[in-house]
Amino acid sequence: MSAALPPSIVAARAIVADLALQGVRDVVLAPGSRSAPLAYALAEAADVGLLTLHVRVDERTAGFLALGLARGSEPVLRHAGGEPVQVPRPVAVVTTSGTAVANLHPAVLEAHHSGEPLVVLAADRPHELRGTGASQTTDQVGIFGTAVRYAVDLPAPDGRDGEVRDLLGALGRALAAAQGLRDRHPGPVHVNVAFRDPLHPPVPLAPLPPAETWPAGFRRTTVAPPAPGPGGDPALQGDPARTLVVAGDGAGPVARAVAEAQGWPLLAEPSSGACGGPNAVAAYRSVLGVEELTRAVEQVVVFGRPTLSRPVQRLLGRPDVVVTVVAPDGGPWPDAARNAELVVPALADRWSSPTTPVGAGSEGDGGFLDRWRAAGRAAAAVVDAATADAAVAEGLLTAPHAALAVARAVASVLGPDDLLVVGSSNPVRDLDLVLGLDHPQAGELPDVLANRGLAGIDGTVSTATGVAHAAARQGRRTRALVGDLTFLHDAGGLLRGPHEPPVDLEVVVVNDDGGSIFATLEHGELATSSARGAATFERVFGTPHGANLAQLCAGYGVDHQLVLDVGSLRHALQAPTRGVQVIEVHVSRADRLSETRDLAARVADAVRETL
Image 1 (cartoon, one colour):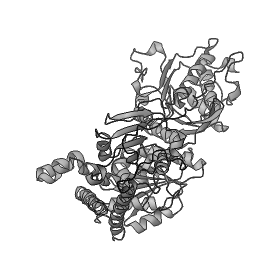
Image 2 (tube, rainbow, N blue to C red; image 1 turned 135 degrees about the vertical axis):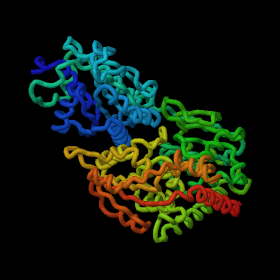
Image 3 (cartoon, helix red, strand yellow; image 1 turned 30 degrees about the vertical axis):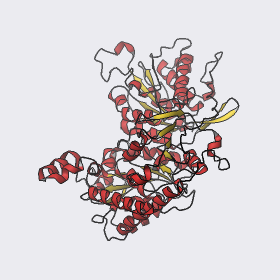
Image 4 (cartoon, rainbow, N blue to C red; image 1 turned 90 degrees about the vertical axis):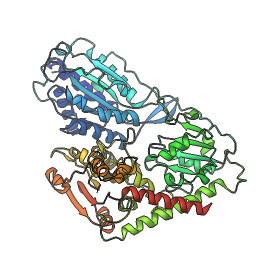
C-alpha cells in the first residue's frame, strides 16, 4: 500500500509517527491546504491514541496553546553518563504556508526567551513555486531569524531511496535542539517541510506504527544530554552574611533552598517557583526603596530571570554590589544591568544544604537577615491592611486597592497542587505583593506560571488553556488571572471546536477598561499635568475600550460571571470548574498612580520603624 501512496503522504506519516516515538504527546494544528498531508497523518495518529491533537483556526492562538502545553507538561527523563536527567517535553505546532507561519512568531519569540521546546512544523510550497507569485507563497526560510535553536528547510519529497531516513534524521536533530540535549538550552525549532501535489491519500489510512518509521538497515541516532557539572561557588566578598537572593522567573526551588540554608533574605517573583518560606521578603519592590536597609547589601545571587522590578535592577546595577548569576543552560545569562561579577551554571550542592552554611557571616552588625525579615513582616502588614479594607467594601469599583484585593482573593483559594497562570502588566505585579499573605505555612503556595520571556500580553488565554490541558493529566486545577486588555488581545483563545479535547479553566479578568500599567510608569505624570495631558494619556496609553465581555463570551459559548465584591469572587473560585469559565471583576484605574505611590510610601515608613 505504502508504495502507491504519494510521496507527501509517505513523508507526513513518517514525521508524525516519529514525533510520537520520540515522546511528543501533543500537537496543535492550524488547518490549511499545503499542510494537508500532516493533517491527515495527525488525525490518524490521534484516532488510535498515539498523541493528542488540538485543532485551532488561528495560528497565533495555536502557537501559544502549544507553548502552554509545553510549559505545563512534566519533563522527560533521559540518561546522561548513567544518571537520569530531566529534559523538557517538546510540543509541536503545524501550520500551512504563507502568513500562517508568520502568525507563530510571537509564540516563537516567547518560547525563545523562556526556553520552551516548541517544534514548528511549517508546510511550504515546493522550491520551484517559490518566487513565482504562487498563492500563499513567501520566503519562509529563516522567517524566525535568531529566535530558533535550529532551522532546516526540507525539499519536497519525491519518493527517492533514503528520503525518509534523511527527513527523520533532520527531525531528530530538531527535537534534540528543542530539548537542549546538546547544550542545555531548550527552545523553539523550525522544520520547514515542502510538499508537492497530491496532498491527500487515495483512501483513508490506518496510522503508521511508530516502530516502523525508521527504514530497515539504517541506524537511528540517540542524543544523550550532557551530565550535570559539580557546580561552583558564588563570588562573595566582604561579609558573606550581607547577601540577598533574587529569584526571577523560572528560578526554581533551589533559590529558596540556598537562601534558607545560608540565612540570606529572598526576593522572589511570583513565577520564580521559589516563593514563600521564612526568608521571603514581602513587598520587596517597596522595601528596596528604603536606603537605610539596602545600603548594607554587599552581594546578590541571582537565579532565573528577574523581570518585574526596576528597584531590583537598580540594586543589581550598583557598583558596590557583587553579583553572581546562576544560569543553568547554555544560553545568554540574565544581566540587564551589565554588572555581573561571576556567571556559574549551578551552585555546588553544599550551598543548599541546611547542615552546611558555608556562606554564614559575622552577623556582628545586629543581624542582617533579622532586619530583612522584620522589614518583610512590616511590609506584609501594610499590604494586608490595604487589601483587607478593599475586601470588605460593598463594591470593588470604587474601593482603594481593589485590584490588589482581587489578586489576593485569587491567591487565597489556591492550594499547593493548583496552577495559576498570571498575565503581564499589573496582574503579575499585584500578585507579587499579595502572594503568600494567606499561606503562612511552607509548601502551601501554588505554582505560578507566566509568559515572562518577553513579558508580553499576547497569547495569555491560549497559554493558560495549554497549561490547563497539561495540568489535568497530573490531576491539577488551573486558573488564570489577567487584565482586560490581555484578555481582549487573545479573545480568540476562547474558541474551541466541538471535536476538540475539553478543558477546565477559570479565567479571572480584572477589568479596569484600559491599560492601568501606564499610570504607574512615567506616563502617569502626563495624566495629572493638565486637562490636555489627561486627554492625551487616556487616548494613547489608557486606551479605554468599553467592550462587553459578557456578550463576547456568549459569542464563544463560554460561561461568564460578573462579581461585584471579594466575597462573591472567592465563592465563585471555590466552585467546581466545568469547561472554560470567565469571572469578570470591575475595578477603577482612576487612582492607580496615587494608590501605588501611597502604598509604597506606607511600606517604606513601616520598614523604617523596624530599623
